[in-house]
Length: 321
Ligand code: XMP
Image (cartoon, rainbow, N blue to C red; front, side, top):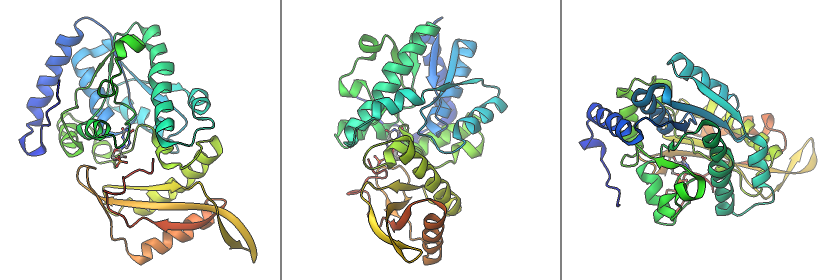
């Protein structure tokens, strides 16, 4: 069935929430359902919707794929604890790095993450819990970009011809599939999520892997995690839609302590956008860019070059892979 967008202007958030709670209750009946919370606004809304509709028949997990930002899993679990929702943290580091080993092609990396997530981690959780439904925060832009062949979003299955029930033994329910990011934020506010969650910049499900060009190894993720922390500290007041660091695959010649240093390149991106569908680079001041270059080359070991992406989306995309 074709998915029809509900645009921000036509969305009545309270009505949408009430309808979704009703849909979920009638679809799941007396069954058990689970979801994965990433801390992004999409999965956060799904978590609250599921809990409101199903109470303790809905279980939420945070899959720590080891590709997250520093301290992220614990931070998100604690916010939800304050909201009265228990989130179980699952350590899946080994599964993800094993699946990503040796891969450099962007779509192959995305495919490996999808497979690890749905087949290796979730199929097992479904089996352990007896759940028959997996809730997912898929949004309208995810569907559109996957169907158009731009990027395989990690959470899109049916649109790629994958039948999760046949392949993995559970049904996928996607309550936000008709909404874009700005509309999801409106629902998040109405459903009672704190502003620190609904006003967070988007963060992709495959996490830092979308920002590592080339092989995703524990060491390369560690470097990018440090760079991400610096970029987020510097740009959190920029008011931009999204800002990120990217680790390049190729090294470049630099100088350190008067000697040649063949080192790493970090690319910074900072986006103006409302829905992630199109975007343009924020016109950051030279002082901000200067400060970014200084901090990244001194605080992140091995970095000798920092660039700022000045391309619009399209032809760029927001993430690097
Ligand atoms: P791109 O890079 O396609 O990103 O311009 C558009 C928006 O989607 C986010 N993004 C993802 N979100 N799973 C997600 O949940 C993904 O696989 C994924 N890839 C990109 C990206 O951060 C941006 O906000």
